[in-house]
Every structure is written in structure tokens, then in C-alpha cells.
Image (cartoon, one colour):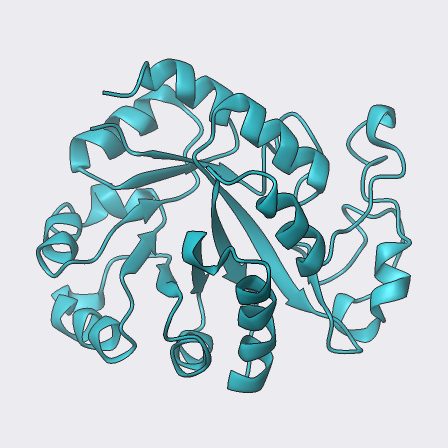
Length: 249
């Protein structure tokens, strides 16, 4: 079976990342799942943006954590990418929920950036539940504290830990212990980990943990990941990955 085709920040090679336009493009490209980034802004609202500032993707200065939702949502998140997308907005989590409700086949991989308390994580989870899409979501973070918050606030929604490298000194047991403690069903490594630690994928999968590798944009990387047995490939090029993978079995 082919690994799941997961569009990184939407179809981010064809539309401005983490926008509704990128999500629509990913759906049209054949992605089975869309990855996007969640951040808290100054008033506690949740917006979809990767960077901690607006400089790169919204054409103005300012830190996400220091701006209110209205200020963030008035920014132009499309012109940096192409004039075709001028006026594209930074979505809120509620916007994603509405979009997802109209795309029932799509799944969502939601990265919680930084440190979230259980109360903050619970707010996000409730938006997903209210929209009826919680069952199609996986919640992930690089922060172990945030994964613990997600476990406490949203035990009913799948969750995972992002990792940048293999367990130090072969400490797979400690990684598995954390995943078990937080009832995490995913562990999502950087693609280079597949090469550095070829035993990691089978060890995780033997424990019932799924593996989604990021961010792989070249056919040789897709081949390497597929041969390693990963459950999903996160890519900026979902249309090309769909063609490479061919029809689903």
C-alpha cells in the first residue's frame, strides 16, 4: 500500500502556505491529508501560520503572539507568493473547520507550535469537535509538554510527537515510553532520520505507532520513505507525489 499523501501547509508549491487557497489546491491535487500550523495570538484565538512573525508571509512586521486575531486576519497572506493570491487571509481554526466540513474525505495533521497549556489545547479540540471533524484530525507537536497537554485535554483525538533526529544512543525505549504515557499513536520524524536510524520505523510500528515522514519533495526521497515502510509522506508537492505513487491499490 502506498504511503498517505500529506500536503505540507496545503499545496504550498502552488499556493500561499497555510491558507484556504492552499488547502483547496491540495484537495484538487489528490492529497489524502493536509498538514498545517496552529499558533495562539494575543487574544487567545488560534490562527494558521508557521512563522512566529508576519514578516515572511504577510508583508508586515509583528509577532503573532503579540497581535490580536483581527489584526492578523486583516493581513495580506497571499501577495508574497503571487499577485494571483493578493488579499488571501490568514485563516483561523474556525475557517479550517468550515472548509473541512465540506471536504469529508480529507484528513488533517495539525501542528501545535510552541507551548500550549491543557486549557489552550482544549479550546482547539472543542472547535474540531463542534465542527464534527475531530475524528479526521491528528494533533502533533515538537514540544513534549504540548503533547502532554493534548493528551490531557483531547484524549479522544489522535496525537503524535514530531522528532528531528533519531533517539540518542539508541534510546528507542524512552521514546516508546513517552508515546505510551501520552497514548500517542503517531511519531513523525524528519526524513533524514529514515537513513540515520533505519531500525526506528519498524520499532515504532511494532508498538502500534504510525510514522509520517517530513518534508520530502523529491522522488528519490519518496522511494526511500516507501521502502522504509512509512505510513505517510509529508510533501510540498502533493500533485507530483500522487502521480509518482500511481493509482491506489
